[in-house]
Length: 481
Image (cartoon, rainbow, N blue to C red; front, side, top):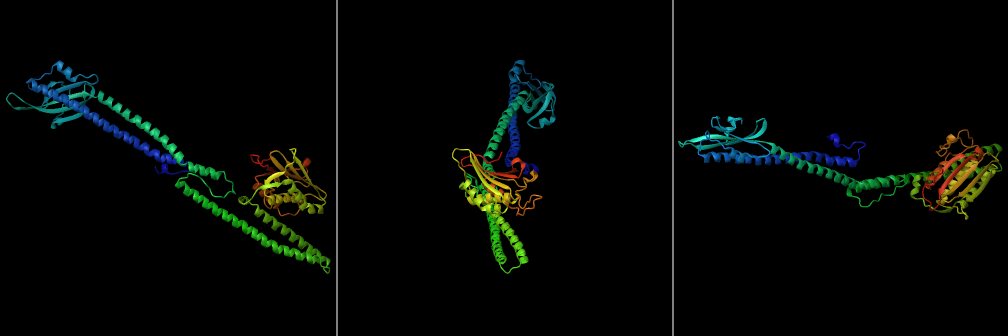
């Protein structure tokens, strides 16, 4: 029973509550049925036994009125027909003296001396091959010498009416009890389902949330028991949100603290490089140190950008209308100096499906610019000198795309899904980098509910990065087909 009431894995709370209520019902209803049947049978027995006593009293009255002794008394056929007539059961009588000697009536009725110890005794016996209810009732008559004469009157009746009435009572009890059990089970199931509805609503509310949605859960018409759980969840979300904010603040503070001394070191190195009295060897060494510091500064800046674009930042991000084409132009201007150093042709193209070009999307302008700069920087970095990088902005009816294509060394297809991992570097690529640029791009794409894919460039040469944003008013996620 303990195992039955134990909430095991895979069993729903609704089923468990339903079992906790219905199992006692399945125990109590049969018990109640048995009690009612016993009570009903008792009253049936009592009623029929009283009828047997009435018949015995009638026989005793007939003996007294006949003026004969019990041994001389003979009941006429007419009297037996009137007294014992019944369409369902047969009734027999017999008369015995105090010593148990047969005097009159049916001699097959079993006489038991123990039955004569009481004034009236009832028991079940067998007569004429059937079960009968047998009454042994004692009486006294005064004989002609005015002496009291003791004798016993036996009345036996078959039990067909008794059994039939018991069956009817049992049916009349069991059928309503079964209907009651069925109705109560349905009502209990409906009640438990309705009572657990707040938990289902809470489950749906939690399930539809993203990992970045940590605001309190708000539900209406919640019972007190479920409200305790909701308050605990809200308290946990608050603590988690505070921990995430503290972590991001720590990363940002650490990045800022690192960036300041690195900037000072780089400034001093640049001054030393321009010193007229510095020797060639010293200038070479200082140049290498300056390059290393520049790379370290780049990594710190990338870490700072990465911390600012974690999924948790969705709690504070504000999406506003942004002209993607204008922002793409600014990004190209920011990267052009790097492209010129490698003699790379950096181009910007745009196209629109509508008659009036509209490149407006809802985005965080600062983060979107970081995305564009990182895509362009990555393309330029992995494109050999004299290569080509093209940034395309394409506006369709329901979405707007950014495409950054280069004719560089490309990315093996088996590594397309791994290039967005932090610090992942494509094998056999000698170009220096932090390994965080595309990770930042991926985080910003997620914050904007956009999508990004990697594929080979035109004619299988180079790499094509495609980012798709959903246009304002369009429904459904911006998925790439």
